[in-house]
Amino acid sequence: MWNIHRKLFWLFDFLLMLAAFVITGRVAPGVAPLFQPGGLLYGRWIETLSPPPQSGDFSPLTQFLWVFTIVAPVTVSCIDMLGGHAPLRQQRRLRMLVVSLAAPLGGIAFLSTIFFALRFPGYSRLFVFSFAAVSCALLAFSRFGGRAWYRYTVRAGLHADEVAIVGEPAAVQLVAKRLDSDPTALPHVIVGYFSRNQAERSVRLENGEELQRLGDIENLKEILIQKPIQRVVMVLPSGGARWLDSALGVCDYFRTTVHILPEVLLTSELGDLSTAPNQLSGSIGSLTLAPVESHNQWLAVKRVLDVCVSGLLLLLLAPVFLAIAIAIKLTTPGLPVFYPWRVVGFRGRRFTGYKFTTMIVGADAQREKLAGLNEMTGPVFKIANDPRVTPLGRFLRKYSLNELPQFWSVLKGDMSLVGPRPAGPHELLRYELWHKRKLSAKPGITCLWQVMGRNRINNFDDWVRLDLEYIRNRSLWVDCKILARTAWVVVRGTGS
Image 1 (cartoon, rainbow, N blue to C red):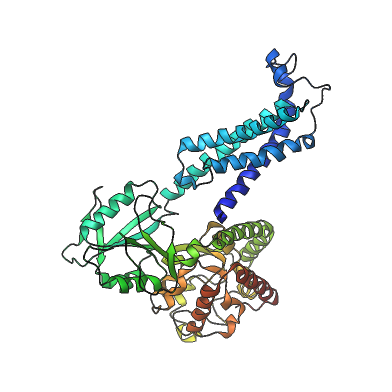
Image 2: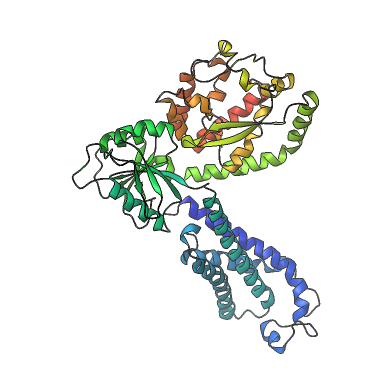
């Protein structure tokens, strides 16, 4: 059964074939005279390839739609059969080159077979072969370009997961060596290890790096609260491990992906983690336990929705952005247009988002002085009639216009349209254990708290309960309902 990623690859390659068809229709009429009698590239062999047209005009593109109808599906099918729809990080350059060249030629060969069998007399072979050449070029460019971009983002750390290893030093060295030498392993950064051997403060890896000991296995809970760790590799000793059940419980609560090495039977009852395909490495046989949504297809659809909606809104709302920027500079010349919003997002990762500036200079420094006016219980600071807010800022907040720049964070992938609100670093220090569970989902611009009377909720625990309710029940349909209700809240002007 196809997964959503494979379907998206099919759609992408089909659109590439459509682009190649349109480009060929634009280019072929200009190239055709070069191959006609008197042309620069004319030769008698050309007449066997493409008989001279009866008129000097090239046939309109609509007359070649049948070529696209036959060649495009066959080409995309050939790409799939040749393994061209596997993740680009798993494909070698030679495979990508062979796929890019062989698949369009396979489509042309199929077309030629049909023409030969039906003895179809008149068609522009020049157009057909030009279509094949442009298709080869676009397919190769997209794959090599995509692979280059992926490797660039990996070097920039955008795809790397922070990995911690649980095991004794010798096992830690072996796992780190296998991960770093395996090209099929997920992009990762090994941040440290846990072991019961307190005499060892660090482990020297084969590449010369020192891997820090993060603590005893019993410290796993505290470290997961403070450090962004997305994956935990647990190496079981031959004599068994009594710590396994409690360690699994901690990772299950924080929805942290677990890889167990080597083979083990899982007996613990877990709530959010379930067995998933091996995601760690092709050369290490591991039992992977991951949050259900980490291998759900709807998350890929959710990301496509985030990119399409945020990109479209950023384009359509560009005049609104400009008007708000001008208004901020006219009313408060000393303030910057955008306020850098430094927060903690998905699984503890820090990022900087942006909002339109709505407060006076030095507003953050005045938070302690206004602590007595805080209307929220818990780590969050919120005042309904905040004296730091400018008159224009009050209007922007009323209709949530100050939130518009966050669509850029959605487009980048730091946030989603729907999800729990991100936490401030100063707030995270005061989180209780169960509060941090809200960081197990990608933060969003809106969520249940925004549409269920955020101005009436003054208890942070109630806020977190709504976020956890969303995490338990989230789906594409739930997201659509929250977005619809958010639009109504914005129109009514019930923002803070």
